[in-house]
Image 1 (cartoon, rainbow, N blue to C red):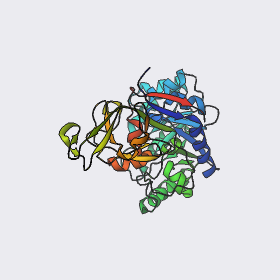
Image 2 (image 1 turned 45 degrees about the horizontal axis):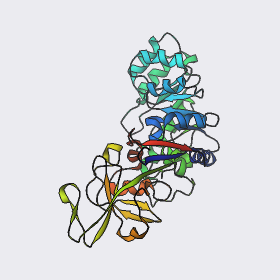
Image 3 (image 1 turned 135 degrees about the horizontal axis):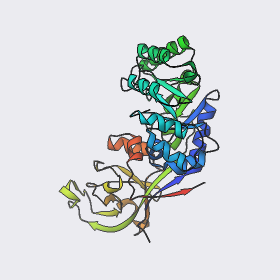
Image 4 (image 1 turned 60 degrees about the vertical axis):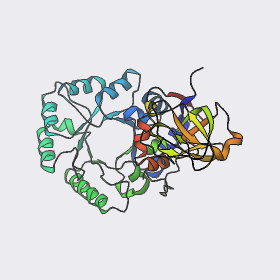
Length: 361
């Protein structure tokens, strides 16, 4: 029997979360963002499950999009990074992909392409300053392309601070994009998960549903009110207990002896570590869930193992019990806050050593 370290993926929860986004923005189409292996949940299983429901899918680069086509996905697929090289436009035409244009060089490659791309999304830099055309570059691009090439054009932007709804920069970015859109009479796509949840004014012709599709708090704060989207976590990461030992007060645990017991303690060793994607820098006190209560991580994370203090639940603990690292009872966002990172990173860093088990509760 393989080790009991696995990620349970509830595809019914993914579908539920997608419907929540649709209900929050009934006048928009919803793009399911499944880049980075669907944020660690499995790109193909998620796409196949949503195939007859999602208005479209978004991926980061063309390799991901082609993999979807090769596995029978027929819905619109948007390539968020667009073309990395001229040949990507030929591949986009061959596989019927929608491409984002965010650099002047991509416009030149597009003009040299043998076949037109049916749908183009032009990304404008409204203030994130990562990717995107300036207003002048957009004007030049639209003037350079034949009218038939921009019939299905969408104008998109990207929020810098959407997970902070009170940040005034959100409204400024929205104002900039709306001004450009009104000038060219183009539909827009600006809203990501936090904006879908909290900013109806940002809802455009298309919204892009990322982290919330998988049931994680879009504001990336475990205490944030996200009642506009009643989300269900799709991933439950679990690992089995492979060791139990009692140590005396004052004894240390793990590499470097960074933690010492303040009392006689029972330590459970779990079969998961940074080789599986559990963060090595997780500090003592990072919670997990066992038998109805939280237990604290103690000592350093190893490549294949981590240790938790189970002294307060020892009467119920046995070898082979499964511990929830995050999921139904313990939010991945809460774990991320302890680790000084974000839920996105924890979900996407799970390695191939962790088997995925799909179900449809």
